[in-house]
Image (cartoon, rainbow, N blue to C red; front, side, top):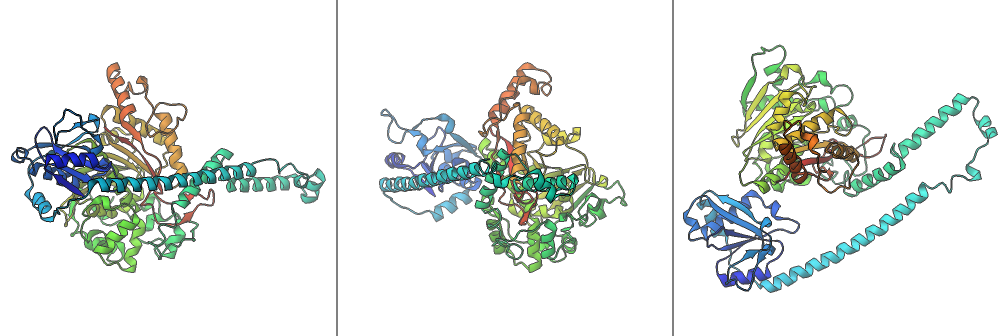
Amino acid sequence: MHTEWTDKHENEELIRYSLPIDIWFHVDNLSSAHVYLRLPEGKTIADIPDETLEDCCQLVKANSIQGNKVNKLNIVYTPASNLKKTGDMVAGQVGYHDTKLIRDYRVEKRENEIVNRLNKTKEELYPDLEAEKEAWLAEQRRLAKIEAQRQKALEKSEKEEQKRLKELYSYDRVLTEDAMQTNADLRNKYSTYEEFEDDFIKSHQQRYIDQGGHSREDCIRLREFRSSALEDGFYTSLAPLFSWCLTDNSLYSSPCDMLEKIGVHKKDPFRMECSCGVGNASAFCVSGPLVQGWFGHHVSERLKHVDVTTDSIRPQLDAWWGTEGSNCVLDGSPVEVYDSIVDWQSYMEYKRRRIYWTAEQKKLMVLMDIPLTIFWAIKRFLRNKSNNSSTRTHVIQLVLAGCEKELDQWPLLLELFNLLPGYSFDITMVGPELPSWMDQKCINITSSTTSKELKITCRSTTLTDPPSIQLMAESHIVCALNAGIGAYPSWMDTVCHIKSLMATRHSPNMFFFTDYVQESIEVARKNLYMLFGKTCIPEYDGKLPFLGIGDIAMACGGHPQKSKECSEFLHTHVKATAVLMNPFRKPANVTMPSHGMPYASNGFGCSLEIRV
């Protein structure tokens, strides 16, 4: 909601009765109207969409006598609660409690189309501001009371669970006469020592599996992870959206079982989804559309680059999908506001409004976790970018690390044209598993709808090779899907390079990674803490520990002052997010018998982000 006030006495009233969710806009150092933006509950100034920000600033400029006449006008905005009035100020004059909370936005020129639209849709209202504020405060008190009751109930539940676990792991009920066996009992039960040993090992393994394969402390933590994920609807929230392949209480023993159920096992483009031997490195691009024909080993190596449009490759994509599958990705209007797509439900609603799906086309949604997870990462980057700079990025540069099946399923990335219609994409797939005949080959696809471009370049190498390090230095995001950051020590070399790049080059802006289970991400996060300068794990506070000068001195050429500046930059501006359940995880209800944890491709995510 936008509110415009031009009378200085009305401004005084609004300052007095503004809410903490109101954002104030004004031309910097010039007279203008005061424009207020009321945010939805739960949103902050960082969540203002680019389009809304532009609307507010255009409205301020249009209502400034001097500002309306000049280009490249600076607009300041801040939470209304940051406005300060003192006794010596005249009506309409304001100061600030904290200048660090002020943000600025550059308006290049007046956009009549925006101003006219706002003027045509405006409503003149004269609310009782004092009554509104009282009602809002009353509602906040009511919600706070409910939250306090919820927290009290949660603490009670946790104490009961701790008591139950204490009893579970207590030895009080173990050393009893009924539970003991004599040597005579064992001789009667087993004929040989080997038979006894085999039975002991099997029973121990079963207890190990029942406890999640971990120590007592780890087991308690894993059970908490499992309980939290299930309470948050890890499985059940997706069942209504994918009722044709999922139910609330059915779990598949493997991804292949689910593919069998929906009739796509070992079929294109699901071939690389299988864990039964079909989806392996030797199968890369055997089923993939076009790539083998453009760059395959039987084709002249001189062909390094291909330019196509989405319309020109539609017939080949339909042949690969086995139905008119390209309708799911290439047809339909682009998203008007990308922040409106926040999970599978909002994405499916968006798709239903724009295309009619056949039963066969719906099956492709099982594969869309890859482009949607990348979209999730890009959204986080764009939100940070809008907070850090008024300069808009028109081309998203992304390194997709550790690629395997992503190359075979590259047409799925065309969905980014619909989800982020204002951007082009420069994506480099890097991974030693990629076929050598695709090394340094490039596909450039132009959207026939938005005229934006998707450039996909392949490098069949590791991220620690010098060319790959240079790619990361020039990228906005390094994205590693299902990467096993916490499982494979080889990743630590890569993260060391990312650490040095963030310190010395301030790029990439984000290192984003996912994995199948929450525990894998937690282990990776702990490894990152140790790698970034700590030998023990500090209490998580969303910020990486301070780095010693020696850690990055080599990256700074041994210059002491530069090393100190880089260390301070990492300590101040590189933040680690919490481990998040991916709202776009693969819709496959699979349970792993070895640990029983909630499990899905791209199930959980975490990131290191530069926030200036």
